[in-house]
Length: 354
Length: 79
Image (cartoon, rainbow over all chains, first blue to last red; front, side, top):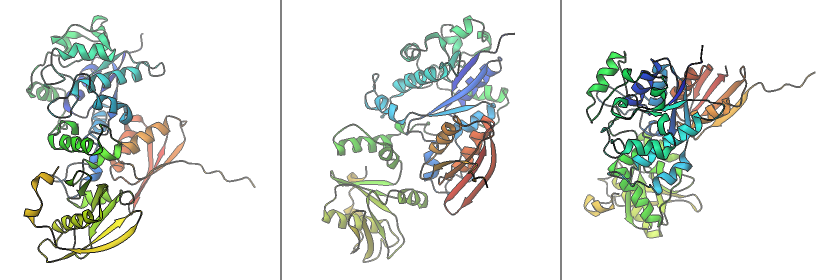
């Protein structure tokens, strides 16, 4: 008897990729998952930043990696690949441009399928085809009928790329033609409605799945994209390091002038996270009152530090007090205390908020 | 008397946020033989859920998990 065919499934942690993998597994194919960490994933790092008190009316959100959770539900291995450095090329110079914000979704999909192909087809891994949870019409930028062949072609996967959820709307692929999977047991989903997927999930016995409200990537977020644009504008070039893009996920970003920006924590979890950067940034913290930690990014002048202290005081418990004492710690020049009047709301122009 | 040899491999993932500790564990275990024991040090509370989840799907065994102050130690037996 022949060994079962092997497929590597792109697992984002959402419902579609979970279903796509399950549908193919149920046809007797050996499936393993692959998940790429770009640095912009809403998953992962964000859990550590958020306060433990966070959560909605149903209590705190579970601090889990949804891709791993999906792998457990499916009973498959999941390989998580760090692509932070390689992803820069995708984001900084996307061949197919950006979506509504700084999301290079089509280039991103091409990149991920190409990476999955390279990983899966390595001799020691020996996979036969790639699975994604794409559905025609589901996403305005990357999941359209016209983009499906682009992804297959530019990734190099060609007809080894199977989209089980919408396969019946697409030309048959190698796994279908070779009989590795039964095309009739695949699906012809299309459009933005989630109803067919939810019905399929129930039919397959799933009772829970992740429903990321704003997608799984920060680059689809308007506010995050604004902060990233501001970062590039301030540094005079389109580039970033991991810490840059991590810090954009945290705190209020206030830019009083082009040469410096304040990152002010909003809650305990962010405070803890920013603590890790205190040795690398000028940082301020109120000491006469409870209040946030603030990092100063850029090249502040001495008068800017006083302004930063007044901003910190404005977000402290002493915002109504006549004066607040703030410790300003420069990793290279030591610590000093400033007693300042908290900035009045009218003195903090909305244009400073990035 | 024979010299004592430390029986564990060590991985310092302190200061890294998930999923990086998981990726480090995954990459280190790829180089270890079945039966090896890996001691992971981490600080991200996310590792308490993510590293055991990764071990479960790959068939490795969590021998011990200790959280003290802000540090987490996870001992994994490679299978």
